[in-house]
Image (cartoon, rainbow, N blue to C red):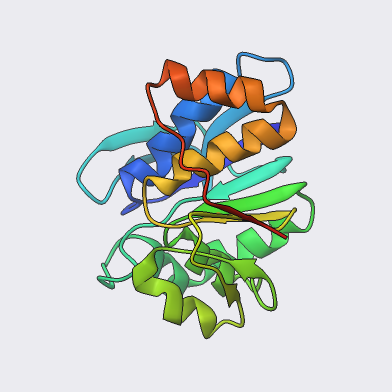
Length: 196
């Protein structure tokens, strides 16, 4: 399974790095492959808090796509809100989602999935500060840390991305491997998962 994490200027660093850490451990197994990707090809990204990092590849045709958030509620000039207003990123997410086994998001990355038309009539969550806004897109908003609706998996605010990533490892490989990764990271899992 190839998971691509889509990054962009203004992304919240923890939204990216928490799941990246989990899936980096999982990618030591042959069934997992992981890549940070830019929308239009390789990218140098500056996160919401100033961290600069590289996405060495462009968005391809992954088995799974993960979308982080950042900058939505503050209506920042760079980040999820700005990308939604530009429109290119949500359109590409909608296109790629047609061919993935699952698509996921953490925090206000869920708002980009909403802008892509992927949450209407489905259980989903986002950062608690955007729950009401997510509902306006027709989502059945759940207040759980992780919402697993099969091919749509969403997580609440920032650190919930770690629990989403561990949920995916548990679902795709095993609970034992997921718990082992959490132990290696010295992370206490929060198992507040809504499964439909």
